[in-house]
Image (cartoon, rainbow, N blue to C red; front, side):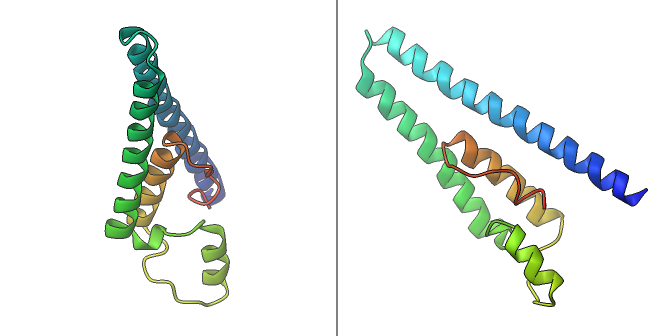
Length: 122
């Protein structure tokens, strides 16, 4: 029964992450399109808005990780393997680390980073 709950919980978390990522990326695309329409196709302003959007999301994710969830640093898979081999890693497993890692993964992907969901869902 526990395995079923873990599978369902992981699937729901991955689904919600995908929905939020798509929402943020759609907002980014809409913002750039509106800037291009309203400024007579000024590509520099659209690029600048896109760069500010991506930087803000990634900087906020970095701030959250370093300030509130130091156990969320890293990919997750290597840390779990080390933890299972007896290495003491404080605050690695817990709701705080899970929440920070999930939110920061969403923000990082929406900000344009090449990262995936495999680590947080491990």
